[in-house]
Image (cartoon, rainbow, N blue to C red; front, top):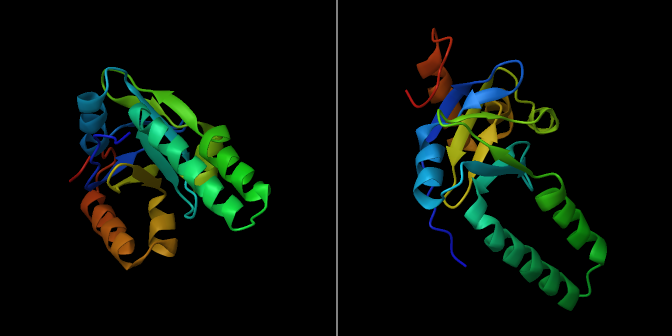
Amino acid sequence: MQADYLFNGSALVAVDTQGRLFLPPLVRHQIDRCSDVQRVLIGPHEIYPCLSGCGRAYAPVLIEELERRRLREEAAGGEPQAHYARAHRMFGAQEDVAYSLSGRITIPLILRRKAQIERQALFIGTGATFEIWSPVGALEQGDADLREIASFQLDQSSGSENSKGPK
């Protein structure tokens, strides 16, 4: 199964106290184009202190990747705990989040806490998936390119109290 998504670009969006935000066009247009349901899968990133998201149609790819890695680790004599920890993170901690016709979603509190997302969220396209960062987290813990994107998006939003998409 190959997903037909291509998430590219970046956007800084406002987040209210309940965790509601508007999906930026880099996400919403791809989901709307590739799916007839207005839902996204969002969960903790495997490595970075951010969230990872994708369209529901990408779930079979995630399942295939999980199984491929399990078989590889098993063949190398690895312990099954790594597989189950990965499965817990990929699917147990992942949320299937609906969005409204206007593109508004609510990121659950447990995920906002995990990624330290408060008043703003930085969306980063990463191909078949996208990431959602705290802008501060991206500046402090991202690679050089991510830090540059975060800095640019924050500079662009200075003075704007309600950023809803790319500037």
